[in-house]
Length: 279
Image 1 (cartoon, rainbow, N blue to C red):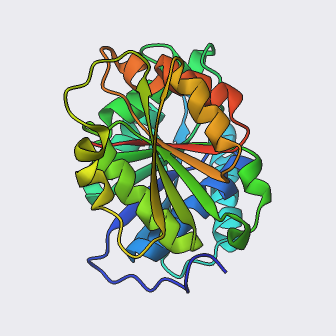
Image 2: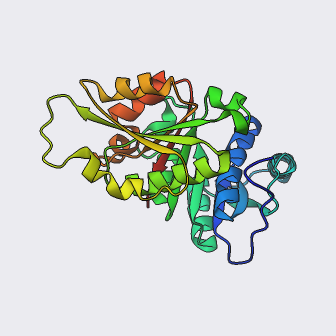
Image 3: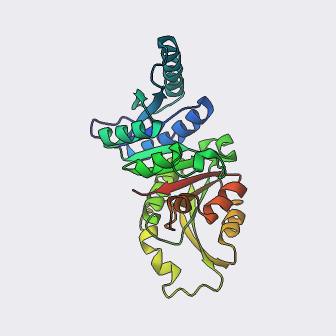
C-alpha cells in the first residue's frame, strides 16, 4: 500500500503531472508521485508525449502511438492511487507539450526523472530537459533514482534534508514533510556551513521558516562545519534512506539546478536523491 490509503481526489484536487517515456523509470516516477498525492490529496496525471517529424508515415505514427498508450496503461495498472488520469499528446517538442499541459491543468507539481549524468546531452543548455524545468509554470520534483527504490515504504525510515535556507528551501521542506508523512519517516534537517565562512545570521535563526513546515513528524536539526559541503552531505546520507535537496540560486540555470554541490551529491550518493525547484 502506498501512503496511508487509496486517494479519492475531488474535482478541485491539486494535480501532479508525471511525464513518462521509459517503462522502468515510469514506475519509479509514478511511485514517488503517489506518495506525494496520498499525503496531499491530489490527482495524478500520467503523460506521454509523442513527437514525430512532419510527413511521418501513418503506419509509423500508429506504432509510436500504440507504444505510448501501452506505457501509460501498464504504468497505471501498477499504481494503487485511486485518482489517476492518463494523457497521450502529440507535439512538436516534449518540453512544449508538457509546459502546455501544466498550464491547461493548472498543475501544482511536475515530477520528472533524470539519470544523474551531468556531461550528457540531457543537460546541455537548450536541451529538452532544461527546457522542461525552466518552462514549467509550477513547482518541480527532479528524481534521480538510487538504491532506495529497492526498499519497501516501511523500510524508508530516515530522510536527510540538507539546506542552508534560501528561496527553494521552504518548498523543499514542504515536500520533505509530505514524503515523511506518506512514509512515516523521521527527518534530519542538515545545515552545513562552509568552514571559515563569516555568517552574521545564525543558521538556527535562518532555518526557522524551514522548520515551521514540519508538523507532527519527528524532525531533528543537525548543524556542522565542513571544508567541502557536498562531501559532508554525502557522508551524512550513509545513515539515511532518502535525500531531498533544494535547487541552488547560483547564476545560470545549469548552476542553479546542477551546481557543484548537487553534482557531487548525485554522483556519489547511492540513495535516491530528489531535488525540489520552487516556481
